[in-house]
Amino acid sequence: MENIDWKNLGFAYIKTDSNARCYWKDGKWGQLQLTTDEYIPLHMAATSLHYGQAAFEGLKAFRGNDGKIRIFRLEENAKRMISSAEYLRMAAPSVELFSRAVIEVVKANERFIPPYGTGASLYIRPLLIGSGAQVGVKPADEFLFLVFVTPVGPYYKEGFHPIKAIVDRDHDRAAPLGTGHIKAGGNYGASLISGDWAHELGYSSVIYLDAAHKKYIDECGAMNFFGVRGNSYITPQSHSVLPSITNMSLCRLAEDMGMTVERRNIALEEVETFDEAGGCGTAAVISPLSSIFDPQNEKTYTFGDGVTAGKWSTLLYNRLRGIQLGDQADPYGWNTVL
Image (cartoon, rainbow, N blue to C red; front, side, top):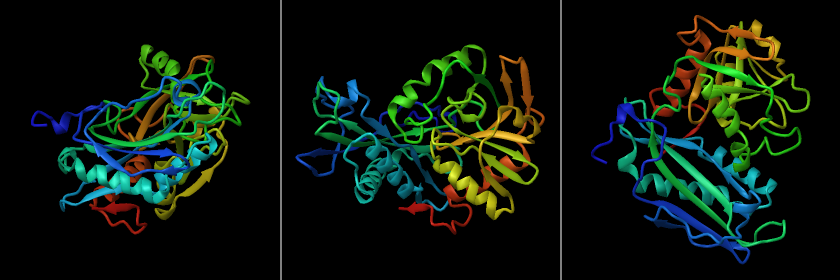
């Protein structure tokens, strides 16, 4: 703890004091418990290991200049986990149980919340897995809901600076009517090959196209994609795209800042008309894009000067961060203040 360099944190796991666990058995949830154990006992036939019955969430807690702790959009993350659980046929923690677990873990690990002004935050990872043993392909009869936290810095080493992305036409992030709209663990396992390929070529992220037509932008790595043209904020709307809580928040802020929000299909070629483009999500908030390279057509789409974030991306980023940190008013009630 004493050796943490808050201003130079990466996005990696750091051991904290405790995590919360709750087991679903015999048709009901048990008692929520805090533990210092970083490991979980798991049956070798657990459905999470064999059949992918696993879902997770990601949210953050921030320490404000006023000393208060703010958890951003706690209830929306709880609702999304419920949606994921229902689709994967798992017992879902209620909004109340989810919220209580998160708040208890944040309070128990308060000393790991980075100081205000460091640019770092406390990342919160709720996890839901099938823990019951099954050999046949069917849902588990027991589940584990777990929440752990770890202090993190920027997801990309560039921070809030433009990154380069490359189009991957050889892999799909999610099937058209598959699990792309939920936060299933398997979605991310399937994306690792694309991510490694992009990194080997010197790109920070991947642009996925829709699996049905290979025409429309799906997501930007593990983030939602957005583009800006003039006064319009444009973002994909598709069953295969995860409903990002960050993007939902940015859409609301954009509207309130006088922008027109368009949720629709975005053909890859259309980005040539965009003034700005980027990815958004809990981990990075906004990652502006300096360019998108399409290797099949040997074409590079560029945005801005490639060095600094665009006007609207900067305004939206600063507004959202201001709310998260308590530096600006939160008229939407997005923060849970401790």
